[in-house]
Length: 148
Length: 138
Image 1 (cartoon, one colour):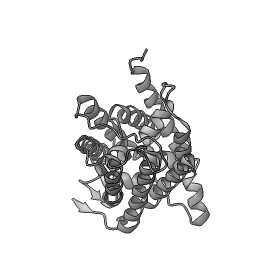
Image 2 (tube, rainbow over the protein chains, first blue to last red):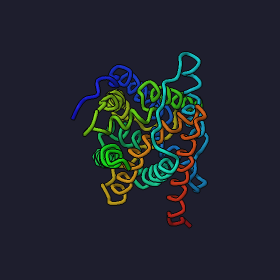
Image 3 (cartoon, each protein chain N blue to C red):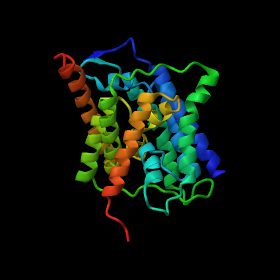
């Protein structure tokens, strides 16, 4: 293991994390809802009609508008997407199906679940971190190293 | 009021993700690349969020209704099952492959980026597949 000091951004990442924690706390204490993005979005496209939807739409609208708000004050950071279109479709399908069967994603299990000291969320977080690490290992050090 | 707080929470969440570096898939993959050049930043994102979140969840456990008088939807503690483990494993594979999890993908969709839009459409497709496979409630 070699630490990539060049790209390490401890303060910005910690501050960003604190904002995410504040947001999750707001949604929980004010709206009584869990800020799990896959759950908020999944509830919107679920076919059950009894699901309240408007708060979901507004929460997601806040997410979508964030880059615009950011751009008014500062320049947006770069995003480098190394996956090609086929890989992105496969990745999107896996994230969509996986987070719904897994009942949560990085925010629902990783942030909210761990904040609630849920053992189930700890297991879920270890699962997706583990398979994520394995996938990046294969993509970066097996496939690319062999010139594939 | 609740609609305003939902919107504000979404906006703060999105700005937090951008500040944290989560909207850059290369950085996310750098965090998952513990056998290569490892960028530990995203561990601090989760740490920072949890340090704040534990207080909110501890408070919520003592509440009957939210501070804006909404019912509290806190998941009941459930047992770990195979379905959740397999789902989470599949999610991790997609996360490592694309470098996007749901939150950052939706935030970056707001910039109008085409590759992000393809990922988000596939993700919504995946969630729709899940819904179609659910047994219908009568």
